[in-house]
Length: 370
Image (tube, rainbow, N blue to C red; front, side, top):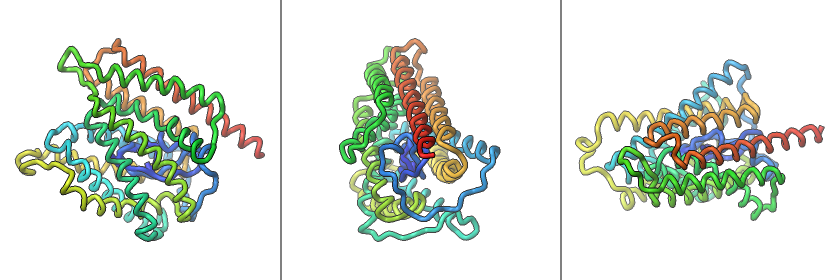
């Protein structure tokens, strides 16, 4: 559901990368947001196209406020969407939900592009140019949303850690871009940890109160990771080819994706027999709240990218991951001694170690460049 960027944790939405920020750390995988990528910065081609957007005046208080807003909105959208998808009448209306989020994203970007706010200047791309990327963005949103619908929040969030090694592998295959040896070593426990969580979280529970992940949830998670990784790599080339900033590119993608899904929804989505009787007012409120969180994520991410450095952004990303995993665990009914907890710790330590290595390498490169 609706970062970009990639980051992200997104979700569904996805974004182009910009220098200096880790996309997967800033975003919720279900939301299309603006993106930056410090950890992947050494993998993706360096040149960046597009006009520079106005940069808000930086202040510690302002940056801190936007980081808190982004963190709370990201946590909120994951658990709100999980609650929505827990309703059997809405669980299989994924394309409709994605189209709604794409519309909210476009409306948000349209609003902040108005002269009164002028956070960016819109530019237009042709339908032929943007359609393939819009299809990829739709898959990047829908598949992770399906994963969330059929798995626990803990597994859903931990599995997103695999975005980093998958993007690294794709960039090596496509661009022969390599990672420092220490970074590769750090990714090994990250992958092993996700594997442990996948195994133990999918085992049948002895108590009905304990939530588990279905095989379908695991399948959607890994297919979603592949789709998100391909989108992350692909969007970098669109960035350069169309000479657009992240906001400009997403401004073109979102409405095309929304309209495109409208043609597919009648053949794919399963709707409640009666929207009035089967969907409670509380569920409608959650759907609107999810859209509100999507707007906050998009707006706050712009200010975070403009006002903070890669270290702050990476820390914020890890805080969001830890908070979502911890809250997901608390609501799953599992004991602290559950074996999947070991996998969570191993995966988390691995990705944190990877972040530290990449930030150090970036600092070395900066100093060497003088």
